[in-house]
Length: 149
Image (cartoon, rainbow, N blue to C red; front, side, top):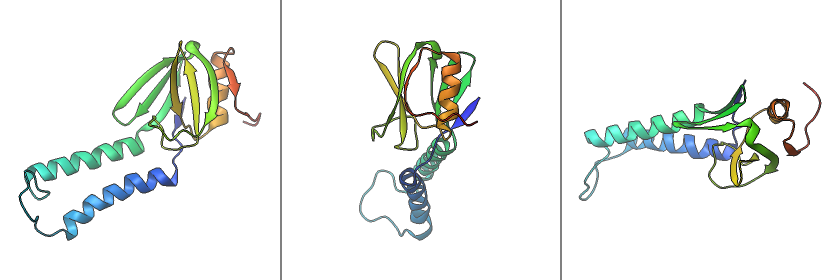
């Protein structure tokens, strides 16, 4: 089962603002002033800008969480990780601003293994938690989960 990441306005503004800023430079930018090793109008500038835009789009559209069997797969653009659901010990709500495979600051903190932690932000939190708990009933949940389907 696939759960896309919840997306906050702040992440929207940061990612899409940077993409449009790069495009704006190419449309309205003048000639570079001074001495640069790589200018935005050089071949390397075009390649670098295209790669940066591609990475940001990949993160925006490719962030989500898939539960398959007893494994939770996390995708954050080109980055991937797997967690055995049997290793998950606790799920709690957090608003951590630190880096995570998430496009929202409204996150779930998942503790697994001995000291490992990952923050995720599924769009459908209740469904996500229910799916994990159905596969590992020993998970301690410190989040209010409604019973509606």
